[in-house]
Amino acid sequence: MRFRFFRKFAMMKLEEAIVYLLASAGYGMKIGQIAKELNVSEKQVYAVIMAHPETFVKSEGRIRLMI
Image (cartoon, rainbow, N blue to C red; front, side):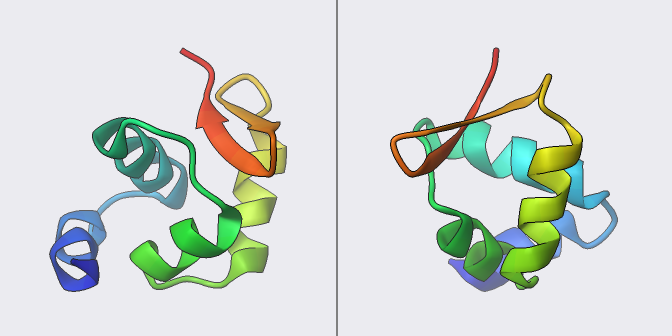
């Protein structure tokens, strides 16, 4: 599964990739799960999520889209 997502995300910005992953999954995910699927570090995922509070919400230990 990871390779399939990585191929789709190769040309996207990390923020767009996280949005796509969460939207296609249909549920919130932990930072570690997101990092594993996108093949990036947890620090990178956390930095993007904190930089875009209008897009992402942290609740119940999971990251969710604010849509």
